[in-house]
Image 1 (cartoon, one colour):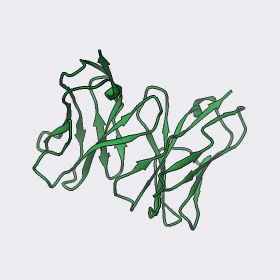
Image 2 (cartoon, one colour):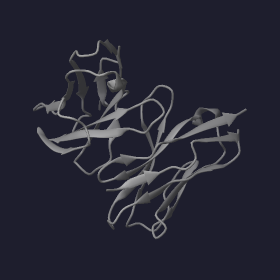
Image 3 (cartoon, helix red, strand yellow):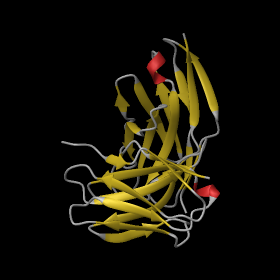
Length: 110
Length: 112
C-alpha cells in the first residue's frame, strides 16, 4: 500500500522569507500524481500544487514550487515570500488512491 | 460552476445513534470520496463512489456505509456511533476515480 510521510509536524517562517516542507512517499507504481493541499482553520482542503510523476519538470504555482525527486520518492514544497495567509496545515498526498500524510503545521511570524 | 458542498456543518450525536452526512459534488463530477479526519491527523479514506457504485473502501467497519445518487450527490451513513467517530468528515468530488479531488468544507461530528 502507498504511504506518505511528513516528518515535520510543525514549521515556522518569518514573513517574506522562504520555507520548505518535506514529504516522502512509498509506491511501486510508476504512474501517479502528487499533491500539496492547504487546510486553513476554515477546514476546507485547498489544492496548492500538483505534480504528475511522468513529468520531470518541477511544478510551480506563483510563490509555490516543488522539488520532485522520483528516484528518491521525495516531494518537497517550497513557499517563497511567505505571507501571513500562508499559515495553515499542509498535507502532502499521493494518488491513486488518494492517501495523505499527517500534515505539517506552518506558522508565519510577522 | 458550484463547488462541493456538505451539510450539516456541525452535528452532535449520542453514542449508539445513527447519522447521515450529505455531499453535493461539483458540477460535472461523477466520483465522490469520503474521508475521516481526526483532530491533528491527516484525512483517512473511508470509501469512494463512482457512477453510483462503490469503487473502493478504506479500513472502516461496515457500520460506515454510503450512497451515491443519479445526480452524483452522496450520503455517508454511520450506525451505532462510537465516541471515536468524533471527527471532521470530508467529502471530495472528482471527474473520475483517479483524478484530482476537490473538497467541501467538511462536517464536524461530535459523539457524546
